[in-house]
Length: 358
Image (cartoon, rainbow, N blue to C red; front, side, top):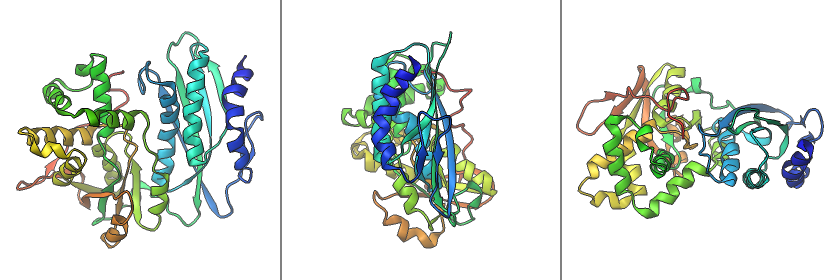
C-alpha cells in the first residue's frame, strides 16, 4: 500500500520534472538515496521545515494549498540565500490514508515545483499512529555560484538600507480572518489588541480579503528576486516569523540596530489599501496594521539590507521593493515615528511555543 501511494501520488506525477533535470538529478524516488549533482563551482544550500496540522495549517484548509505552502516555505529559505532550487525530499506522516487529500496535496506540490523547476527526489511516508495530526517535513536543496556570499545574516553593515518585497503583514491578515471564521479570534491576539483587530477586520474591504487569504495559503516564492540581489544585498532573511523579529535576526547577528520607518510601513499599506486614507479611523487602523506587520508571520517575503550605493539598482527591480529603514550602530529594533523620537520595539514575533493553534 505504501509503495503504491508513493508511486501514484508522488513518483509518477513528478516523473517528467525529474527527467527534465537529468543533468542534476542522478537518482530519485525508488533508490535508497537521491543523488544530486550541483553545477561545477557552485555551493550547495540546504533548508528544512516541518508543518503540523493544527499548528501551521487548519484541518479544513485545501489539500492543494497545504501542498503548495509546504514547499513554498522551504523555497523561501533558498530565495533568502540567493540560491536556485535543485530538488527536494518529502517526509509525510498521516493518521490515515485519504486519497482525495493526497491527490490535492500532491497537485499543490507539483504546481509549485514545476513553476520553480524543483523536482521531488525522495522521502518517506509513515503512519502517524495515535497522533491525529498530519505532519509534513520537506528538505530542499539549492545551489549558487561559489563566489556568492549567501546573504548571511552576519554580513550586514552600519549604514545599510533595509528593504522588503511585497506587502509584509498581509498573510497575518489572512490568518486573523481564518481565526475569525472559526470563532477563535480572541485566541490569536492579546486581549489588549482584540478590539483594534476586530475594528481592522471590520474595515477591511471584501476585495482585499481573498488576497490576504492567498498570501497565507499560497505564498509567492521570491526565487527570482533572490538571484537579482546577487552583488547588491549584504544580508537577507525571509519573513516567516514577522518583520520585527526577522530584521532583528540580521541586526543581532551583525551587532547592529535596525531603525524602521513607521511612515514607510504606513505608506506601504496605503498603497495596497488606498481607500484607507479616506477613513475617519485611518490613523488608528494604520497603527494596527504596523503592529500586524511587525508581529505577524507566514509572509515569506524577503527582507534584505544593502549599501546606499545600490539604492537605484534595487529600486529598479520589478515588482518594486520598498525601503523601510536603515541599520545603525547600536542594538535592537527601533521604530522611527514622524515628529517623535525613536521608540524601541519590544514586542515578540511568531513563537512556535507561545502562539495558539488553529
